[in-house]
Amino acid sequence: MGRALRAVAGSGSAVHRGNAELPAAGRRGDALLDNVFSHNGSYGNPTNGDYAELKLEAGHPTNCFRGNTELGGGSATSSPSNLEQTNPQCGGSAAPADPNPAFLGEVYCDSQLDLSLCLPTDHYPHRTRVVMHPLPTNLKTMPNPCAGVPANPWCPTRRARRAAVST
Picture 1 (cartoon, rainbow, N blue to C red):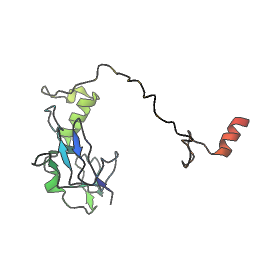
Picture 2 (picture 1 turned 90 degrees about the vertical axis):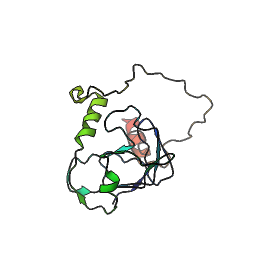
Picture 3 (picture 1 turned 90 degrees about the horizontal axis):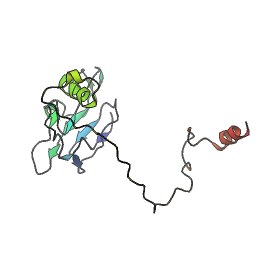
Picture 4 (picture 1 turned 45 degrees about the vertical axis):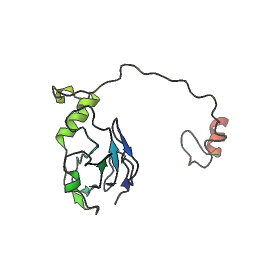
């Protein structure tokens, strides 16, 4: 089974009282439990809510959802809307596919991958420019950012670095 998840979703926020983080793409068998959400789904589009699930392939462990609420009371909103009723148990048993076409269509619309899937009522604000704020000047630098890090393209081993320099 996967790990328990605390949600941090959309344009709103999750008040961290639960026991989780949003899954990386492709995670399965995870639990989204006892989170308190605030200000998600404010664009008013279909499937806008606190959290959603896509299962594009069958046979992977089931994710579970339980005890998630809105700040101030009430149930959190999900897509499909009944996730807490259909997937409350965390057992990791194999799940059927559920492509959640309404949510998938909204993802394609918002990302502008396929505008034909946008509904006439959809509203997703799009960034018109990027603002680069100045970096703080009073931060200490890391003395050795590669210390204790496994070898990788940015932090090769000493031997590999010497070999690269001597050739």
